[in-house]
Image: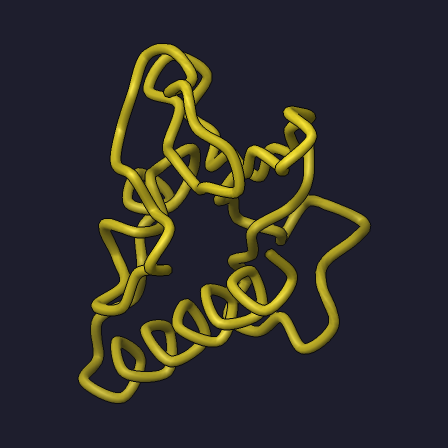
Length: 106
């Protein structure tokens, strides 16, 4: 799960760098509460898609369409939720966050 999260964050950094290199910034509407995996070309192998309710599976990622959160369901059933957001107004971010966007835990 941590490796997947790290890879997603790196993918977002690469997206930000690419968009800035070609003169296109990411807008707040593209970022805030969006499914980050729609922005990335690579998805974790255990990503199951977008659902309004948690799928009956374990050790998977899915995007909760109601709460607008990326969710990981552990093998014991507990969940951790992340939201894609602009971090400009937050007082925290993950290590190495650039471009003002990050996946932050809820």
